Image (cartoon, rainbow, N blue to C red):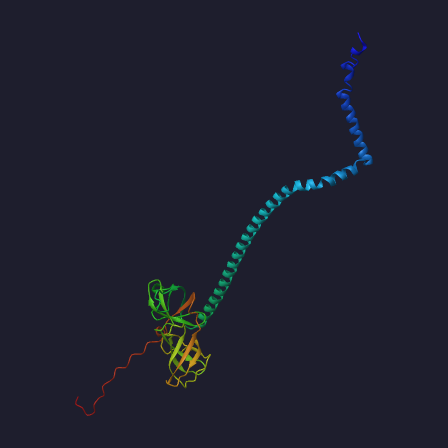
Length: 305
């Protein structure tokens, strides 16, 4: 057999090399060695720094969508939380404002009631407290409905006052309620007295509907000044004397007429009053007039018996 035809390659047994287990042990030993060497001598620290620097842009780009989604979620959560807190704060503010308004209203009402009770004790006239329920339905008159009526002893013509002065007069009595005509009504008149001068006059409701009073039939040369206080004179037998009624606000003297036009502002709260006192009319407290003596016929002298 020629030598060139012989197969000089080694058998497959000698081509296998190291086994897989041997390779595992070798690589494990190398890895353990590198780990120990790196922990002791920091051999791979520069390599890690270079890799971190090189991969930072890639890592930054990869994190942008995640950060954007997270920021968007935080924005909507904070927006919803801000709306909820704003609504809650507005509700609390409205509740506090309403409570403060109620406290202020109750304080003012309490003050008015105390003043009204003090005025009632000072007067030497019997009276009863009442509450204004609502305004009368007639738009052409100035009347209110109070919570006392015939069953409570309210009499027709009774004066009605509040804590500041005369408010009006009872003009209609029902079993449970009564109708009070205010002093600013054009059909109501009240005798008044100028405290400064002692001049008596008659105050009517403003016919123009301006919410005031007017002194009529006062001469142009009458001694009246702006700011003069008018009180009840008591000559009508209805209103007790000395109750505050109004103050003179404006005086108009015209050359073509002999009378002055005097406008007054009522002291009572004619709009929005709630608590009043109904007084007993003066006429019911005045002693009746004694009966007239029966005239005796004179005896004629010299007459026949």
